[in-house]
Each structure stands twice: as C-alpha cells, then as structure tokens.
Length: 137
Image (cartoon, rainbow, N blue to C red; front, side, top):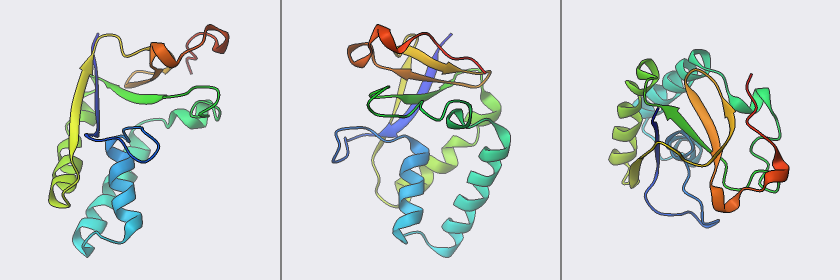
C-alpha cells in the first residue's frame, strides 16, 4: 500500500508543510480568491466534507501538537474517488503562486488514524511509543 500527500513546497513560519486543503483554506481566508475561485473552493470543500470522514471528529486530540507532533494526513493511493478532485485544488494553488509538492511513501511514519481512504501519521523521529497504536474508527 502506498500513500500520497500534497503539501506546501516550503515550510511555513512554524516549520511545517501545510497540506493542500490547508493551503487552499488559507487562500480563502486571506480574501485573495476571485469570486469564481471562492465559489469553486467552497463547493469543493463541501463535497470533500460529505465524501469522507474528518479524522479529528473521531479523535479530537489527533492533531494536538504536544501529543502527536508533526501529524499529517495522507490519502491512500487507492482513494481515486477523492484523488481525482485534488488537481483542481493544485490548479487553484498554481493560479495564486503557492508552491506545492507531491509526496509518496509506503511508510510515512507511525499511523495514528486510518480509514478506507486516508491515514494520519507522525514521522518516526517525532513519535514516542507512549502515544500508543493506531486508532481505527
């Protein structure tokens, strides 16, 4: 099994690489999107919200920086029904000059959450065994 993640090509001020949705959401909050791009972004986010589970609703502490430092979301490469919509987000980032990169891995770290479409993993170098095993819904 392989995983894929789309994220910022350069780290932000906290030294992390926000994912594609975080980048697009940041653009929307900044007010920089055109009316057409904002409408597309809103519809896209609504579609994704209804298409798959937000891991934070299963485990609200999943993205707690103290408990799970460096936690990142990865799509399973078999989640084609979701991945086929990502290029629209990448094109949006391109239009606004936001550099992004694609990462693929068979082993992105300690899996903290998994479902049929995605995982949340913490990099091995930031993980601690006391945090426990993967949590499955």
